[in-house]
Length: 136
Image (cartoon, rainbow, N blue to C red; front, side, top):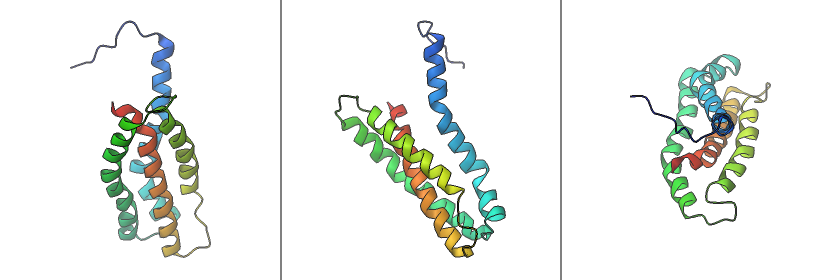
């Protein structure tokens, strides 16, 4: 079943919504389609360890997503309920995704794994903060 887009929306509004979802789409593609390859091939982390490292932040999301939704529902701000989180999450997401790909080259496998865990944990939290505007 196709969803009909309301005819009252201008092309600019539709384009703005599409551009707003671009960071989320890029994040999903990077983490689902590329991060395991990057961890094992570029960083040299053993596959089992890379799997554990990449699983922990995803499990964290199972708890933080509903909490962030409830928190943003209760937020009262001159900017609205969602915009403060969208703004903060955008900057945090940008910095943390960039940091994902700057693991120290001379570090041991375990140090790289911890670095990846921490930066992916922060990125996962940032996407939760940023993308909660779409929950209502």
